Image (cartoon, rainbow, N blue to C red):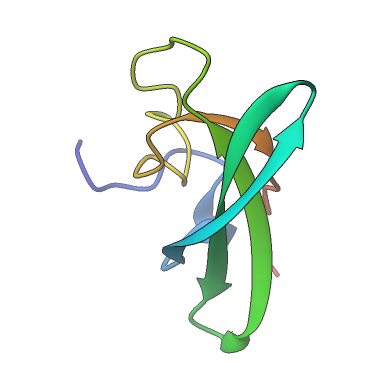
Length: 82
């Protein structure tokens, strides 16, 4: 169902994603940056990088990063329980 956490991603519940203006080239693709925080510690920031140069529709639909509108190039997952 929309908005539900997919199996295995319970540890990613409640993340906040904030897109930034930072860019970087990864594997020859121009990438954009976003910062990810968790409810348990909003001061700890994780970086993810994504690109719109690879034409894939809804590439993150089944991940905790579904609001990112590009292919993830550098990212992380926490699975299970902390």
